[in-house]
Length: 162
Image: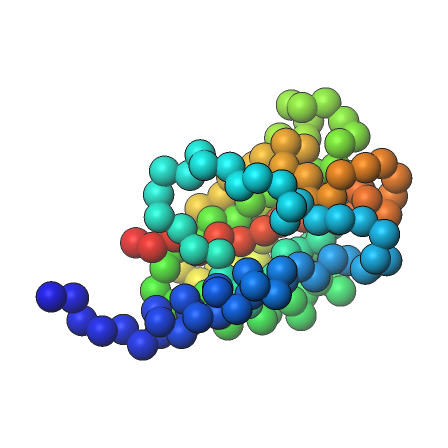
C-alpha cells in the first residue's frame, strides 16, 4: 500500500480549484481575447501529468528568449512551488505565428532553455527539468495583432509525476 502524501492531495485540490476558476494570467489582460480553454483538449501526452495552478506562464518580447525583468518575480514564485514538489517539470516554449515553423521551433526551444537555466540557477536540480518547444503550434489566444501575439510568446510549465 502506498504511503499517504498530504502534499499530493493539496496539489490535486489546487488543480481542481484552478481548473474550475479557469486560471490564466495574461501579460496585459484587455478582456478582448479568448484563451484556449474552450478548445478541445489534446490527448497526445503519454505520461501522467498534472497542471498546477500555482505555476504561471512566463512571457517574452518579440523574437527574444531573454527573460524579461518583469517576469522574474513570477519565475521566483514558480521556483518555490517546484522546489516543494517531488515531481519533474516540463518547460514548454511557445511563439506567436510570425516566422517560419523551423524558426519558431528553435525560438521556442531557446525560450524553454532560458527558463530551465533560470530554474537551475535558482536551485532546482537540472535532472528534474525537461524542455519541449511547440513553436507556434499551440497558441494561447487565436487572432492577429500585438495584443494577441503577446499572449502567445511564452513558456508554460507542466508537472510530471516521477
